[in-house]
Amino acid sequence: MVGLPRDISPGARSRRGFFADLLIAIALAAVAILLAAGIGVVGFLALLVLLVLSVWIGLEAAVVSLMRRRRRRSVGLGPR
Amino acid sequence: MLAALACLVAAATSYVPAMRAKHNVALGVSSVEWLRHNGGNPIVSEIENWYYELNAPEKGGPALTTLPKVGVNSEGEGSKAKVYRPPNVAPLIHPALAGEGVWKKAAAKAGPQPPVLLTTFRSDPEYPQFVAGVAWIDSSRTHLAYVPGLAEPPEPLENRGSGEVPLAMRKRLVATFNGGFPLETSNAGLIYRGKVVETMVNGIATIVEYRSGRVDVVRWHQGPRAPADVWFAKQNLPPIIYEGKLNPDLSDGPEWGETVNNAIRVWRSGLGVDAHGNLIYAAANYQTVESLAKILQRAGAVRALELDINEDWTSFITYRHPGALEPSNLLPEMLRPPERYLTPTNGISSPST
Image (tube, rainbow over all chains, first blue to last red):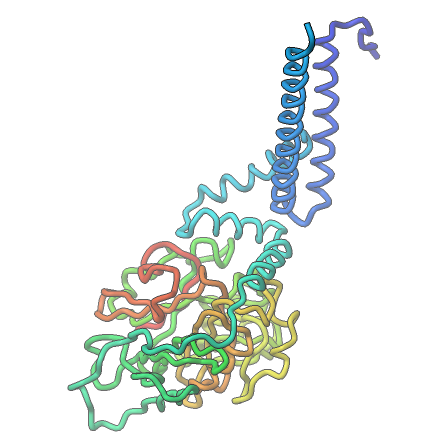
């Protein structure tokens, strides 16, 4: 067994995290495909989940950018 | 998110080749059929049921003043020869409209004994705008052939052909119509060219063509195998009319398949035989299983089964001239083009003279 290096760059850490997430995602997908009545159901539900998540992420990004803009504007209009 | 993406990639490995395969329906319809055939039948059916319940027609409404024109006029071709011709269909709504329930021949030069007659009538006094299209096919002058489609019945199948009415058959083609539920959703049997393609099920309504050429609609009771005298048999749900009477279970939902339930008003089609053994086909929009059975019964059917439902699958096409020329839908509202069965398609039943 070779231990993974502990002192790594932030980039490498994020790549390692992504790789772990990917493995978990593939495992989850495999379980879903095994348990579902057919690949059609899996695809249909995955599409729905992706649509909902895309809308969610989009809304979240929009709200964050709106709040940032407001904060900047309020800083700009403050007393000198 | 990643798990959903992984699932989508896996589904795409099945979906993309299915959509690239040869078919003659819109991408949306093909996608729904793909979903139905890949475990999504309950989802599709549930969504269909919601959709049709939300879009259910309302009773009443303004009365119709004309009926869609069907067939060709028969003037000047009367015959003194004694040939059987079915009685006109008695109108349900009075006063009757011009030509309502009156049989007209389907082809221009069909002679004094036309093999196919067509008519229309308003089928439900509570919904005076619904028009049913009915066809009568003379079994003594026609031969019924089942033509496999591109994907139905599914593989393996010997002698599939090209999924359209063969050129050799077109010379004497008089009509074509939809061939019933896909085997996967009907959970019933098929005998094609004397061989069992899908195991036959006792008690199910069956269109049978015997090796002698005789055609009938029966309640199957001959077990899972192909009897020696049967050339073709296709099953679809229990009979909706048997020995002249409506099936008493027409209002029982689950008996009528896994797709949209019996009481949802959609395009429906059915096939029966009259007391003389001639075929009667009927189709109309906004029908329940029960109202479809009543249409067939009024047109003279003594035994009948339900065929396909939904606008994408319901077709009855006649050809005004030999060589499958000038095809025409039984009802103008039928969605699929009259050339449907002259290009590769799904399962077909086609009587020819």
